[in-house]
Image 1: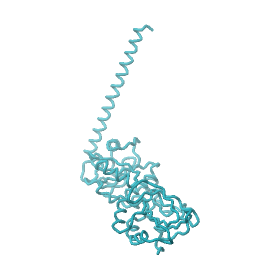
Image 2: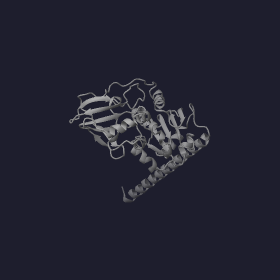
Image 3: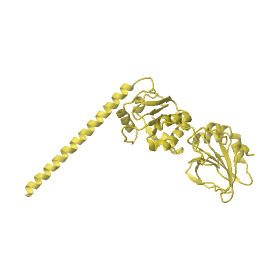
Image 4: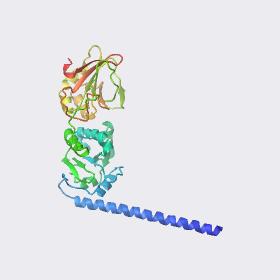
Length: 338
């Protein structure tokens, strides 16, 4: 091929490539314009003082666009079951319900459940809390109120929604639901059956066995560490009712941290379902020394069934005595400890 013909062919190829790239760019701009217009139209249509209720439907394209604009990286289409907590940092007194949403996300995430904490706060305000409480639930920063307006959440950002894959609202509640209610709603729609049984596969701690290492963080904050007690008594406090388990035993916790038994130190390990800041504040105000108090970063064996909140078991907390090799010498209910 002659040099002149080769140059002509190259110029034409480059020109054609430029045309294709220009067309693609304009197509993308047009597509984004259409999606933004669709989202805006859906927000206008959703404009109402009344929150979404069971049976209402959401425009899935508008919902996907709103999720992307607020930080979601999920690209599934259509969306999977979607659990949204609308909250501001000032409303995080409902953190126990959010942490239970974390449990449901870990259990059903592989089956299609997505869960997000939605807030109009600045990222540092919420990211510090997510890091401190070891939440796995991602946060969407709705600073332009796109999601709030589309989903008709109240101005004060305190609402919970569960949305089906077809955009149907299957659960809508102002504030945060109780753990049992949230679990039953998610189970009903994710698997079709509400599970009232108790998992007996994991047993309580047995005498003669080695106490498993527990991943914990100091209640006062700090890095996650592995707790491997030796020649100590470990008080394991579960969380089927964090408020009940905390306040009903405050005097006992104070006694446990100020007294020694058989020359052994005592360590208090609270379930990870306890909100850290709330727990630290209550213990400090209750006069409990927090030097040897920890927050578990994993379930407490058979004692702490973090998925089911009601089981009928009386033993919500036990004290486990271990020898110098970490073997369990005794396991007693907290009520039996003098």
